[in-house]
Amino acid sequence: MKHQAKQKTVFFYCTILMLLVLPGIHAEETDSRYLGISLGSMFDQIDDKKSADHFYRPVSLNFDNTFGFQIRGGYVMNNYISAEAMLEYVFPFETDSSTEKVEIDVIHLALQSKIRYPQQGPIQPYGLIGLGIMNTQMNAEISFDGSNIQETEWGFSTKIGAGVDIYITHNIFSNLELSWTKGMGNVDHVQYPAFIVGGNYQF
Image (cartoon, rainbow, N blue to C red; front, side, top):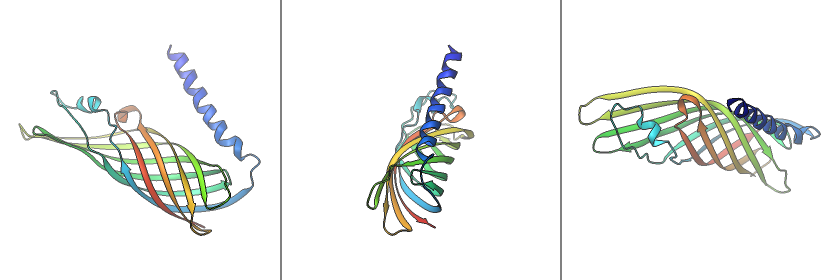
């Protein structure tokens, strides 16, 4: 059973790799770069049950939505494919009750492939897939005994998304994007959809 699961995982990533590479084989190279910053909302989809496992006694957690920002640097390989490096910080997801206050913030570093579907005009739709490293920090204050819990965890991450680039000039464009990020391993309890708006400069 485990062997079959591994085969499916390998097949999945090989298929994604082919989808990323094949559209750009005969595409015209552009050889340009860009930098950008994005801001947006991150919506709580944290696994409350797994988060509660960090406590020695039963707790009920219900996190609020939050917001964050991203800094991106990209290399436009051709009209279809761009490679991106992204640094993201997510301000703490919080839950506050009469017995405990818990905060989980996220630092996320990812490499992303951005697959464009070239269109005439300033609006260029794209899909996004990424793999990265995620760091989470949990701070908890327990009211009834005044104790504190602080934990830092690392793990890998996956990300999928879709959006549009809107060119204002030849060098300046904004982007609107919906994405889903999910942690793996020690951070598999952290996942969040996001809606971001960004500004970018291409040179």
